[in-house]
Length: 118
Image (cartoon, rainbow, N blue to C red):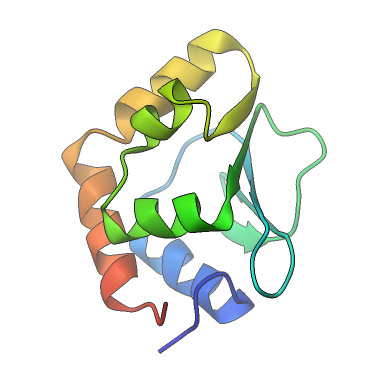
């Protein structure tokens, strides 16, 4: 079972998540035991590494990222509490946060959590 935030784990995320269309998102998880980790989602799926021209960038602490994957913290709550920082057009931020409350995202998180060694 892949360990959280490793390249193998990112493969699990790619396999579990539906396509996001033309939107590009970069996610930075900071303060983890192995340092900071960046991965991104684009039309081709989820992949390791940053994406300099992403339309939306999300940055959150390791513990909060882990809590989101486990289903213990909603991304919108992390955003409202200032625990998740964003960069990008406000409309895109709100659209993505709304999508995280829908069944496809929640189902994908369940599949990822079930295949993750935390």
